[in-house]
Image (cartoon, rainbow, N blue to C red; front, side, top):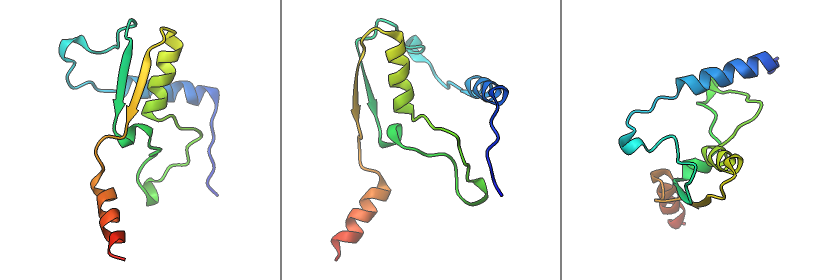
Length: 107
């Protein structure tokens, strides 16, 4: 039987590992961290709100909770308390979506 064991020590360690494993490839113009005086931000892309844990099969995960990139950014901006306006757009339709639109238009 699969189960999730989650202690406060586990949570703290996993958060530390996750925060230290983020790799910023290029930070041109010192864009990050975001300026606390930021008035508006646009979050673009369907994966920003996607709930994706991992692969499938033996790579599948049973997570205790999940925060999407969109929700994480919005939450951080709300905690900053500067009233930053957040705009979201799905952006371009993904190839997978186009396939389904085409496939179902045949019937």
